[in-house]
Length: 460
Image 1 (cartoon, rainbow, N blue to C red):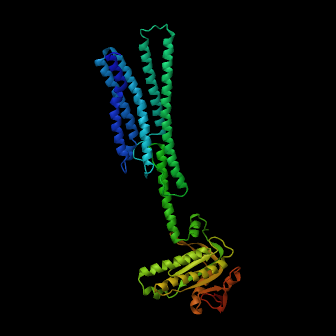
Image 2 (image 1 turned 90 degrees about the vertical axis):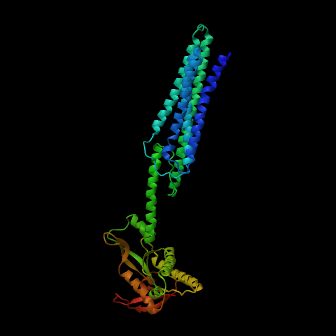
Image 3 (image 1 turned 120 degrees about the horizontal axis):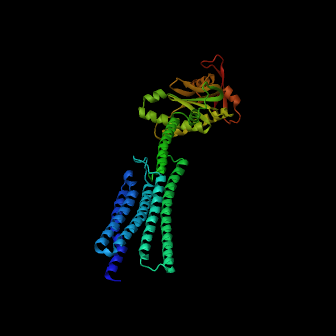
């Protein structure tokens, strides 16, 4: 090979690569620096794949143009070779640009998977259909340019050849077949990488949705692209904010209303006009609370009340009861509603005994700290009540109304006179089925609001 031919071969083989390599290295460094930021701009991030495609295609095209100029100036007899090199550079530019696009896109997906991104940046979405269109145009364009290049080379080769020789055509056929095979392989590589990126995006978003479906409302669906999948992720994240707010409202609601009642209210399962239900009502009131509160700071009083109410409500709930309300230092609870319970009298008496045991444990702690003990009285009565939402048009509360409620409250107050801790009515005693509580007859007593006296039993 003469010096001119050698120089020509070197230029064809290494010239475009040497021209493109600095551009690729510069862009890789720039893109890597952006993705390494703690909170990169999504608008800039999602432009990186297209910038990579444009950088590669531009660099290869520029390299091809430079080659045309070099061949035209220095290798005039081979000027046509420069045109062929330009066509080859365009084909390689499309292939390299698409691979660069897919490579940067994959790095973006891996980088953003672990970040919380709530919404898409402003601007138009690049739909998946448009991406596929660009992919097809790139692949078809690359193949068309490559085939055009081969046709030019073959036509140039056939000039001056003996066209009657069969081996010439066989050689051209093998060359074209090999080129098509290579082009098909390159196209499959591009399609496979695109599919892999798409699968990675879907898998990451489905994994997040799977966590959400298991109750993790803090999880966000990652926004990993600027297409329809990103829009779905954005809308899902907005929905999650609404679910978190609803969950917060419900948990806050449960702190003011028992979970059983809140479920019934939220499910609209309470009759507008109320309903008559058979229940057992329990009232519990702390003794000498006014004098106790006057001797202590408001903070210590609130702290004690919260501890006391927490202990008592836990016991009531454990025995199937529901706290309707806290009235000052008093607890009103119901057994048998809002969920029906055939043995609500037994459960109410068992709860009262457990409340007494819980108070003893609490007092033991207070004695250990040198603090005075607290006492309470409990009244229990069974019967029918009107249960429903009671109040104004703007504010309602789930309440129990009727003589049963009033009598339970009166029995609680009667503990002071009889110097007892737990009193139940004769009606409740008659309904007991499996209670092991020891009952002590206290006779018949007059209570406020009742004309007839009431049979009363103390729970020892």
